[in-house]
Amino acid sequence: MRPEYETLRLDEPIPHVTVVTMDRPRALNAMNTQMMADLRDCFASFYVDQGDTRCLVLTGAGEKGFCAGADLKERNGMSDEAWRRQHAIVEQAIRAIMDCPIPVIAAVNGAAFAGGCELALACDFIYAASHARFAQTEVALGIIPGAMGTQNLPRAVGVRRAKELILTATPFSAQEAFAWGLVNRIAASDKLLAEALATAKRIAANAPVAVRQAKRSMDKSQDLDRGNGYGFEIEAYNRTVGTADREEGIRAFNEKRKPDFKGR
Image (cartoon, rainbow, N blue to C red; front, side):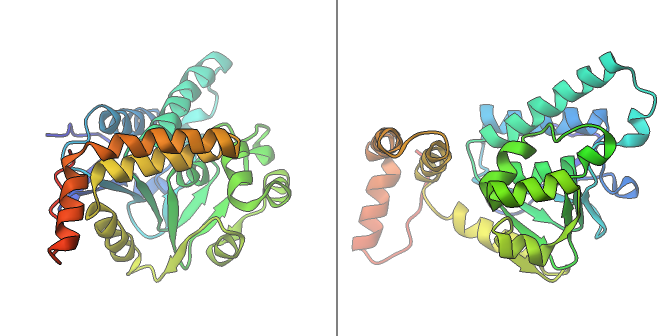
């Protein structure tokens, strides 16, 4: 049984898939201190124990906002020390999302600005509603992206495009995000979650250990040279050889049926 969170809703609309909904729609799901802590604790819990969950979908409540970034009303008048303490929670939350061993799909249902854009970028890939908009607006507020934005955005769209977007603080559309490689798929707003869930269902139908190992290996491809990355891949591959799921997958193929993976 997962704990309940003050600012998040957790649902399992289909087997093995958990939807994490940021639930502050009146504030466009902006992250106050409580939401930062809830996001951190939620994704850290999946690092410790995946349970029956094989794929996660992160989205926002309502149709206007995925996440508008940090709650600037809460930050108004905040001391430097309090700001740093609060931001440390954001840092932990972003790392918890990126370190999550199971795949995380962002279903961006509206504005994903500043820290909200960084939350989406921290996920494994992004589906966006056709009306969604993205931005890294931090330099217009006297700060810079501080939740992996300067690291993940260049990896998604290229460093020259990322410099233009971050240094101008200019919002961009879902269609531009798709053209630049930040977004994998655009959907009508009323179809977004269904499309994300359909993909999550396909991921969840595959062997869980193999999915986790493949995700880890691809993550390392961004940090290692190709030779060392291949060394990591082989280590990850060998972790799957001794699993019951590997035996089940081969047996099901030869018996011409769908495999029944158990995650072990």
